Image 1 (tube, rainbow, N blue to C red):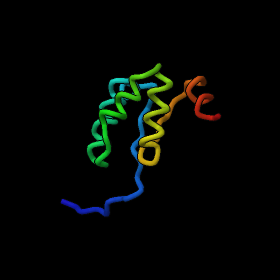
Image 2 (cartoon, rainbow, N blue to C red):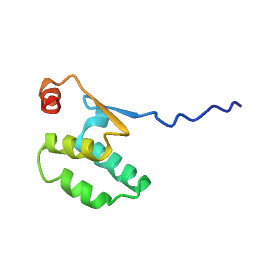
Image 3 (spheres, rainbow, N blue to C red):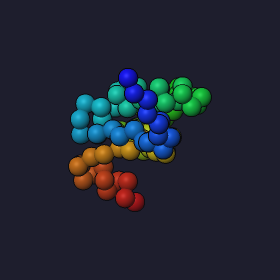
Length: 83
């Protein structure tokens, strides 16, 4: 058995091009993270579902961007976040 130092600034990485990148998986992450952070997860998920997939990504990033890195090779998503 070994004990390691827990990294405080380690971010979660989600591959949007894989199975963790679908809207339902992102809403699951949002639910878990909002509970951990004592945020109103229902409001966040309501915002996420009020638009298209890009809206899901933007609301997720607005709320959890300090903790989670979203990665993709999709040019449309990269362009939307470059603005």
